[in-house]
Amino acid sequence: MRAWRIGLGFLLLTAMLPGSTRARADALPRDMRFGHYTFALIWEPGACRTHDELAGPDCATRKPDAAASRQWSLHGLWPSTPRGLAQAGMPDPTWWRYGCYWYGADHAIPASSCANPRLDLEPVLRARLDKAMPAAASCLDRHEFFKHAACYGFEANAFFRRALDLAASVNANPFTAWVRAHRGQTIRRTALLAAFARGFGLDSGAALELRCGRDPGAARADVLVQVWLTIRADRIDTFPAPASLAAGRRGNCPARIVIAR
Image (tube, rainbow, N blue to C red; front, side, top):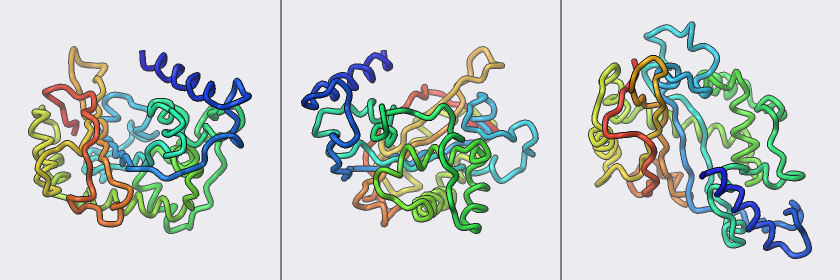
């Protein structure tokens, strides 16, 4: 169903562009203003347990007390659909599928993340990013920049510096301490959202989207893999102030969730 909707969105948008059966990059609206960011963080033990590709290449050798098993690692910082494309009728799922690749020839998506150019990052920042994003060893950093940032005009060093600072802020928050304290336990989804609301001084956990995966070795185990925070674009400089956050989507986690150790 989701693939069908993405395809329909593609056809609707291309049909709206005069004189073409395929949306050319030079014919597309380029108003790149946007309303919010989705800030995606990975709980590495959960990603490893569910064999999620975002876990990075070292799950088999990672020590149980490694820092990555006690805090969130970085997935990405994703601006929402550009205003120009939204006003032209592009559905959000189409933008989620293509991102900045939409503006390339034939909207081509690279066959692998490593097919994107290497990022010329400052050495200190590169070291910091490699530690915070284990899957950078599999070129996740390239994918994140060229899909989610390049077409907005972001400079790579500044973009990743901001994302890393946001991650550090979340990891220093009482919310992460709560998650850490409940490693190896099955908790209620409502309790996790309440911990988030308390940690960030919010009335509810509506700004937090929970993403779970299945443990292939268990009959049924919904394991926390990611959290996605919705951050207002015009207030990202004030994060983690409560007013910087906005309501997002629910996510796919059920009523009871395993926090992997």
